[in-house]
Image (cartoon, rainbow, N blue to C red):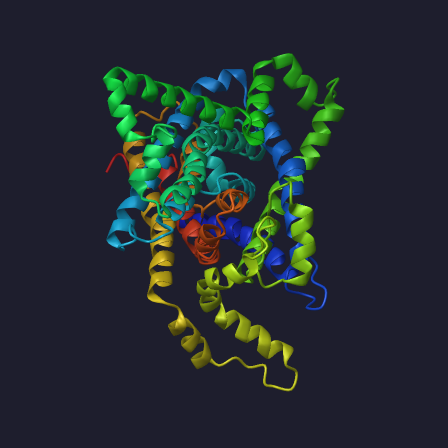
Length: 498
């Protein structure tokens, strides 16, 4: 089998696996029709359970068992590259937003945040175990472990290197998301309470100086010294809140604990080596983490379906029980527990989602009607697509281009340039492919969760309806970028010689 064909087969298999797992979650929310396997009202509890019981152990064990103290020196560039990639993603999103005339849209800021921060844990952890089964991928790790030694388990080494790189990348991701992304979304609510609108300049200003917009006339009277002190106090307050957000994030705490365990060799071996004194605890954590990515993918896919049916899938911990009870009575409405009139308001908010999903509902209506033909007309689908307004089309194209095509294209060129210049010689070869895939995955649904928790239901609806086309289209783009990365980063690629 030629290397090119093997590369394409490996990429297609890994992405196809992710698609099939997601498809099972998609169908589980629809069938059986009278009693779906995953009821929409249960998605809130399932999401919290998946994160706290499965993904947190995955983050902890992914770092604690895979990272060695001797390898930390080769992994620190991953953190720097994660910051560069996230910055590139933001700049690309902003630039394309200007091209598509999106800066004046009401939901420009939350859409920018959603496009900047991708789903960098669940999808790569599902994709790479399948990729590592192929010889063309194992070639990337063979040179890192001593060349032609046949006694080395290249599959195990590949998976360990992938876990180490993914969760080291997650470290940089967490720093940026919880310091800038999270604060931006929260300050969006603050700005709307002030003047009913928000611009990108206002939000950036609020992130830096959240408390400095007091009475301008009074500030001028106090003089420049008083202004300087007030701004300095605002900076300190903002920095304190950012640090609290970062350090209290459960995912970040699990990550730091994993790094601490990896730095204590005897404790790491006791937890994760065969016959270790604490192996029972490490084995339990590994069993939980083993189900994390699969179940997370199922829940994500189920959440996309539920959101397109205008239902809440994830709420805040405080009012989740109340929301689930209300969802049983009004399944077609997004509900905020502290707003008695939200049903009436949300009918206008979700009109854009209704238009974008007429085709799907028409298909379902025809299936439910046993007396009518079950053959769906192509002309009907075409009519449904034409009914979607131009703004919705521009938002979807903008998000797909920036998140799935342009950003990974720039990252791919950057990685090739750094690799040819020798700046990535200390980084494992598989890490370059992981960085490329991380730049090409669709957005993280945590953005919608935060928007819902802050009561920004309109913004959450606007972001939610971009996820289904993005995740669907990513099935093809991830296969393309995986293939290109494998061709470019192989030891015998010869790209730097040409």
